[in-house]
Amino acid sequence: MMSVKKLVLFSCLACLLTVQAAAQQYAVRKDFASEWTYFEEGRYEAFTGNEKVSTVYFRVDAGKFQHDLLAVSSPQPFNLFIDGKLAGTGTRLHLDIDSLAGIFSPSFTVAIRQKRIWQEDLSTRVLTRAPQKASTEEQLVLRNTSFRDFAIVGLLVLVMLVITIIRLNPKLASDYFSVIKIFSMREMDDSQVYTRITSSTNILFYIFCSMMLGYYLMIIFHFLPTEYTTALLFKAENFPMAMLQWLELSLIVLGIFFVKMTLVYGLTSLFGVPEAAGTHFFNWVRVLLVVFGTVTIIMSGYFIMHGQHAGFFYGLLQFFGWTLVVWMVLIIFKLSSKMSHSLFHLFSYICATELIPFLITLKVLYN
Image 1: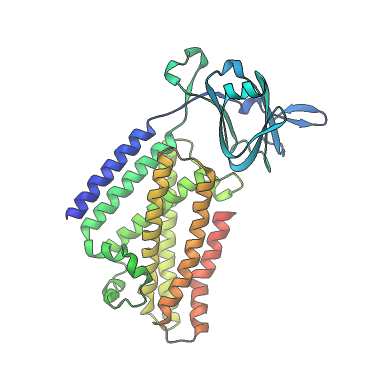
Image 2: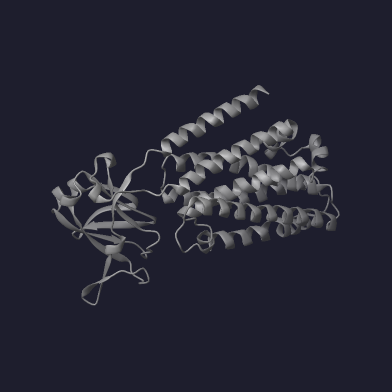
């Protein structure tokens, strides 16, 4: 019980620290999106968002933004030019406007070049370093923090839910969160656990796991560019919308859990090895809980502490796919000792229960 109490105290302390860090906000002094232009047929035209162009331009009067920063960010890499000279590359740049004025000129032209300009993804703003001293005439607008608020509240919900489930059944929780048993090829002691896969506590773990994966994907989707059509369906504009979309995504994942369970139990009966069903499904949930539980903690901490590098979140999406690949290899070794059939039968079973669903998952997430 002491370990649970320590976990509660640690979780509450961590959440309080992240809330305090999230409260330290910058202020947006100017957004240049409405002033973007593109060059076509010898003249500059206003960019509306529908044009298929790779470069946009805007003017910056440094005298109006003394001691401020020019902040440019996009999920996709870009090159930033000032008065025709390369000034930076990457996915996120913060440049001191006073320094730029000293190097180039008091009024300069900024050009952003990338594979294609997407208005929803590219951000070109001036951030003030001291919002409390700014003039009211500058109409400072605090950066929208509703999605970060969602991340904090969502993390609190997940922490409270998993602590509640652990207290209800510590033995089952220790089985689920056992890293050693993920790689163990002999699991004689878990036979009773495998036969109660639809017990109420197990279902609570499925609910928690689906909410955790929904939370994980929600934050990743927030940073993906617009060409990812699935991500577009779950890009919330405010806190209530984020909570609702998290619920929707979690229900979809929970539905996938029960489809997976039906598929595994049905096909093991068809192949004449019903005893392998519990091993397969329980270990699948175990891998999701341990691996993505750990990564979700890291990801949420990074985001709540104002980490916004799009490459980091895209890497987490890639990690999702590679984890499923490693899982397929792992389950082949686990089931090979339980299935007395030929290797061809085992491969056919894995194709039906893992490989085909994996390819469908890639198509949905990466399209």
